[in-house]
Image (tube, rainbow, N blue to C red):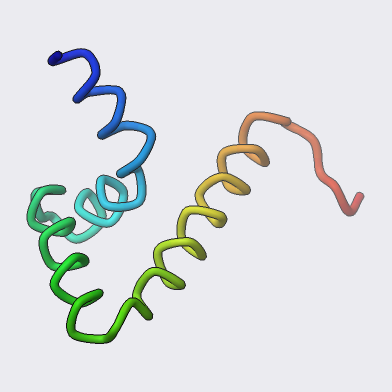
Length: 71
């Protein structure tokens, strides 16, 4: 069960981990704030979450490819 939890935290909550590392907060606290903000703002923070997830995937892809797309 611990392995499943670790897998879910790495794949589903990568955005919260990233933001927590950048701000110096625990990722669980960032998740809690995100959930509260989603309830208060009627789900609009989900758009921000998806944007950051997309940006992190693009960033990881560009770092891994080692080539410049526009050159």
